[in-house]
Amino acid sequence: MEFTEQDLVDLIVDSCNVTGPLPEMLSSDMPLFGPDSPFGLDSLDAVEVAVAIQKKYKKRVTDRNVMLSLGTLAEFIRN
Image (cartoon, rainbow, N blue to C red):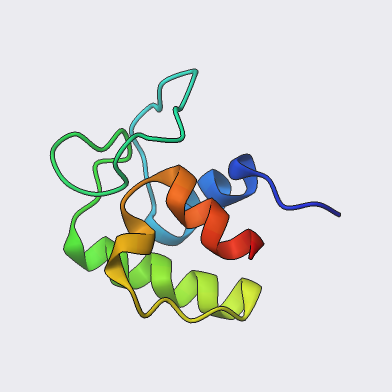
């Protein structure tokens, strides 16, 4: 099974208990955290996402730049 950005969106929604509606189209360059995030995530959520990625994909996030956007995080998981 191939990893998709939708898999990542589902992981973020589940691990951070995102309750608000998400835009129908999420762009790969949208920020994951901060005021412009469609997920409404903050720095504490970043820890939750990093832990969830480590558990599910066995990848440890050590560079915060990996988590700038949906696209950068998806690329990190793919590689």
